[in-house]
Amino acid sequence: MDWDQLELNPRIITAVRRAKLKSVRDVLCLSGPDLQRLTGLSRSDVQQLLTAAATICRRHPPIPALQLHREECRRFESGPRLSVGCPILDELLRGGLPVGGITELSGESGAGKTQLALQLCLSVQYPTQYRGLNSGAVYICTEDSFPIKRLQQLIRDQSCLRSDVPPSLISSLQFSDHIYIEHAADLDSLQACLSRRVPLLLARGLVRLLVVDSVAALFRCEFQASDWLERTKQLLSFSSKLHQLSLEFTTPVLCINQVTDVFSSSDDTLGPLSSNVSPALGLAWANQVMVRLMMRRLQGTVAHGDQSSALRRLEVVFAPHLARNGRDVAIWREGVRGVTSSDGETKHTDVYNEVCERH
Image 1 (tube, rainbow, N blue to C red):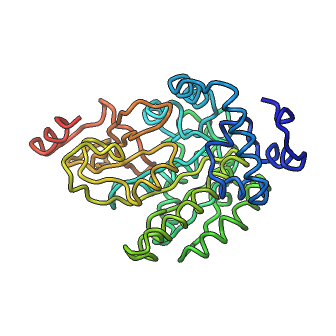
Image 2 (cartoon, rainbow, N blue to C red):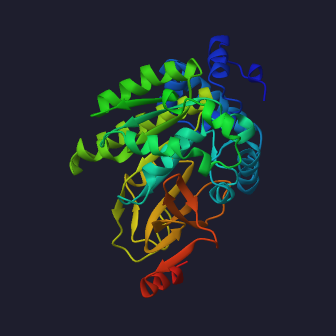
C-alpha cells in the first residue's frame, strides 16, 4: 500500500518508510515499544500510526491465514540464503540460512552447535556464486572463550569441505581477518555490543552474519525464578534489537541456545518430537525465532577414511518454509557434514533402533 493514503503527519510516514515497514500488516505485527525502537517515533506518534493501520484493516477484509502462510513461504523460498557448506544440509534447509530473521540452533553440550556456527562464519565469506554473502561475521561469546584453534583447523581444511570452490579462491581468502570476536559477560555489555559495535560493522559492510553463542547463558544466570517478568522484558528487548539489525542490514542472525529437560510425555511443539529436551527460555523466546533447528548426539559412531565421529542429527523444529525433517550428520576435521551411504557406520544397535522408531 501507499503510506500517503493514511492521514498521518509526514514525519511519521517518513519514519515508517525509513524503517522499511512495507504494509499495514508489518505495523500491526509489532508491539508499540518495538515500533518506537524501530522507527524512533514517540509514544503518541506510534499510537497514531497503530490507530490509522487498524482503521485501514477494518475497511478491507483481512487476508485468509492460509494465504498469508503461503505468501510467507514463497518469500522465504525465493529469498537469498547463506550456505552451510554441505550439500546435504543445504538441501535440508532449502539452500541454507535465510538472511532475514533469527535462526536458533539449540542442543545439549557436545552436540556440535558451535562447530556449525564456526563453519557458517567461513561460508559467509565466499562470493555469492558459491552461496556466501561476500562479507565477514561477528561472533559474540557469552560463556566460553572463542575456539580459535578449532577455527584455524577448519580454515586449513576448507579445500576438503568446499570441493565446489576453486582452491585458488580459497587460498586467497583471509578467513581469520574477517571474523570479529566479541565477549559479553553480562546483559549490559551484550546490549552495548549490539547497539554500538555491531551496527558499525554492519553499516561499513564488514560483516553479514551475526552469531550469539549462547543466548540462554546470560538470561539464565542473571535472573532468579521470581524475576520472570523482568527477564521477559529484557529478552524481548534483546530479540527486538536482533530483528532490527537483521531487517536493516539484510543479515542472517544465528543464536545458539541451550536446552532444558522436558518432564511431560505429551508432544512439545517447541522441540523435536523424538527428544526429551526442549530449547531454553520458553515461549517468550520461541515466539521471536523465525527458524528453530536442533542438534542431537546419537548413540553411534560413523567412519570416513582415517576419521571417526559420533553420530549426530540436525533437525528442523519449525520454520515457515521448511518441512519438519532431519538429517544425520558427523563432525570431521574439515567441518560438519551430512552422513552419506559411503560413510561406514558402527552403531549401538539397541539404542539407535530406539531412536529411529521415534521418527
